[in-house]
Image 1 (spheres, rainbow, N blue to C red):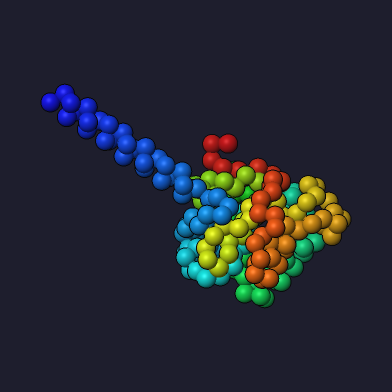
Image 2 (image 1 turned 180 degrees about the vertical axis):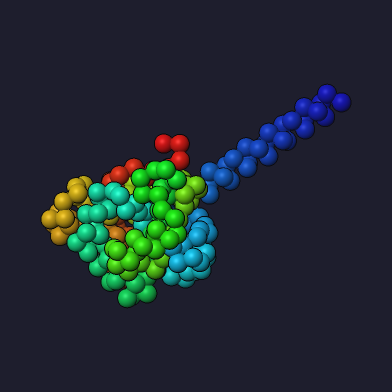
Length: 208
């Protein structure tokens, strides 16, 4: 009987370890399938990553109160990137993971007002106040950028560009990693720079 009980504990332990490994593997990683998610949007609708299957997708973490985000939206640079990408069939998703009471938190109505104020050209702005999707993707900053290819593989994650500043004058001087990744995909090539260190304001998750 003791041997049977011991065997049962070993089996349960193996199952638990297997479940933990599965959960770990579900985290976003370059070169792996992008984890799916479903979130409410500023348009009052629910959006799932699966809705855009077969498309190139850019995912941008955002926070309207962040100076680094204001750098990109204040002069229209982010909107220009969004327009150029979506005109070529790319889906552009913005995600706000700021928790209630934290900088950048918005209700759907407030997010819709921000969309209008910023004149965003993104496909959708989604809200992740519990931070589940942000943590799933390992989003650390605003902005933090991710690119998913038409096969559903995460092919880029990191900074939007190569100059870590809040100065709009630096935008044209910098290498834009997102634009470069999209160009590589359009040319049928592997993304030359698949990962960089993101910069910006920390994502304002609950408990932080």
